[in-house]
Image 1 (cartoon, each protein chain N blue to C red):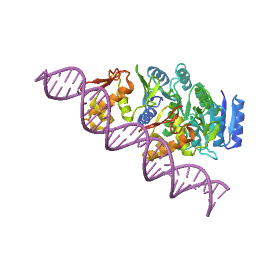
Image 2 (tube, each protein chain N blue to C red):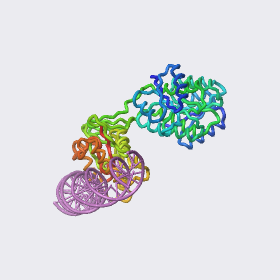
Image 3 (cartoon, rainbow over the protein chains, first blue to last red):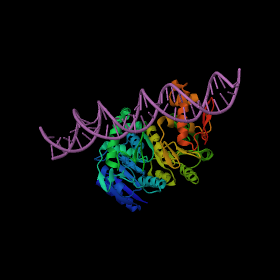
Image 4 (spheres, chains in turn orange, brown, red, purple):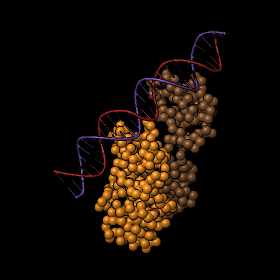
Length: 224
Length: 224
DNA sequence: GCCGTCCCTAACGAATTCTTAACGCCGCAG
DNA sequence: CTGCGGCGTTAAGAATTCGTTAGGGACGGC
C-alpha cells in the first residue's frame, strides 16, 4: 500500500528522502538511474514513484514515457529546472505532479498523500501471455518455450504497440507513424517484412498465425 | 468531459482564465466566492475545479472540505501564499494540486491535463448488439455466435455507417459518397453487391434480413 | 579492417478484395 | 398480359494487397 520508489542520482537525496519517508510509514526502494528504476518498478509492486528528472543515463521524460507504456503508477517529479517547458513536457508525458528544488519535505509528503489517495489499486502485472509466447512489457523481454527470444528494436516496437491493445485492430498508419514516424505513412512494405519476422520468431506456425493476425487492407491485430 | 469550474474573487483572473481555457477547448463556468462555487458544482456536472484560496466569504480549505463531502472531482488550488502550511492544509483537505501565483498558463494547462487524465473513467467500449451479431467499434471487430467475422474494408465501412445510426435510414447517396467518395453517387449496384455480402456473413437468414433492411428506392437501415 | 546485426528496398507469386456485367425475381403501372 | 425499374444473387476478370525472399548499405564491436 505504501511502497515508494525514489529515483535520484544523488545518493544524499536518496538517503534523506528514504529516511524521511520511512519515518512517515512508507516502504522505500531506491534507484540511482533510469534503467534500474524501470527494472525495479517492474520487479516489485510500487504505489508511487518519486522521480528526479536529471538522471545520468536516460532523459527523465523518457523514463516517464517508458514507465507509462505498462504502468499507471502515480509519478511525482522532482526537478531543479523551473522552466515551464520542462514541467509541461514531464506532465504531458504522464507525470502526475511536479515539484522544483529546493522543496519542503512537508509539501512533498502532502503531495504524496494526495496522489496515494487517488490510487488505491496496486500494480497490474505487466505480462501478457498467449498460448505460444509471453511478453514482459516492463523488461522488454519475450519468452517462448521458456527461452528468451531476441527481438530487434523495430520488432519490439511493433509488438509492443500490438500487445498493449489486445484484440484491437491497429491500422497500418498507426503502426507506421508510431514506429517509424508520421512521415512514413505510405511504406506499408515495412510492415509486411517485420510482421513476417515477428511471426517467424513467435508463432508456432508462421504461415498460419494465431496471435498476430492480418486484417487485409487495414492493419494488424494481436489476439491473446 | 471538459467542464471546468473557476472559483476566484478577482473578476480579471476569472475572465483571463475563462478565455484561456475556452481557447483550449474547455467549457468554463465561474464563481466569485465559496458559497456560489459549491452551488454551481452541485447544479451541473464539473470535471475539474480551479480554486483560489483567498475567497471573501469562506476559507478556501473549508470549500475543499465541504466539496469533498459529496464530490470527488479533481481540485486544483491557486494561491498567492507560498507557505508550506497552506499547501499541506489544502492538499490534506482533499485538493489534488496546488500552484502558487504568479503561474504560467502553460503549466496550469499541463497540470489540468494531468488531473483530467486520471479522472477518465475506464473505457466504456461502444458495443452494438443484435439478436444475431455484435459489433465492437473500438476493437473494429464483429462477432457472430461468439466467433470473429472477417469483413473486408468496404464491408466494414458500410456496416460502421449503418450501425452508428441505429434505426436511421441512410440513403444510397450517403452510403456511396461516404464509402466510395462523392463521385460514385450513381453506382447503386455496388451497394446491392456489398449488402448481399454483409447479409450472408451476418444475418441468420440472408434472404430474409432482420437487421440490415432495404428501403426500396431510397437506401438502407440498421435495425438493432 | 573485419564481422555481425539491423534496417531498407525491390521483386515475385499467392491470396484477397474490388469492380463489373449478367441473370432472374418481384411489384407495379399501363 | 406485358414492359419496366429496382433489387438480390452470382461469377469472373482486374486490381490491390500480402507473404516471402534476398541483397545492399549503415553502424557498432572486436
